[in-house]
Length: 82
Image (cartoon, rainbow, N blue to C red; front, side):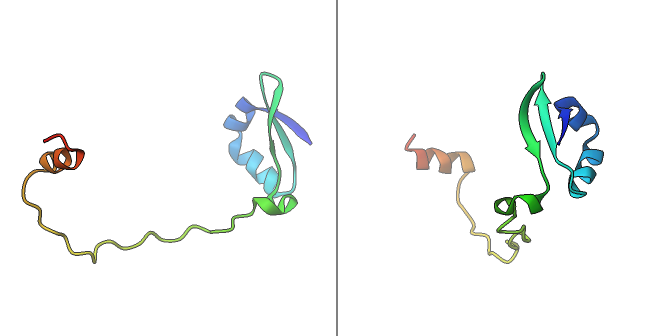
């Protein structure tokens, strides 16, 4: 397992990620103290994404409701400030 500093991870992020994808493990240190481990996902089955990202819902089909008064007045009313 290779040891790298937080600064090295920040400066060489792409190179480190390619190495992790290739199966290499890293220990990240801050001021010489180990703070994290970077390991390929295959080595840690519970780290896999259970719910992959999806497209957000399309809200353009929702009909707008006209409202009388200003937003500030509505918020005051909801907060009970009136």
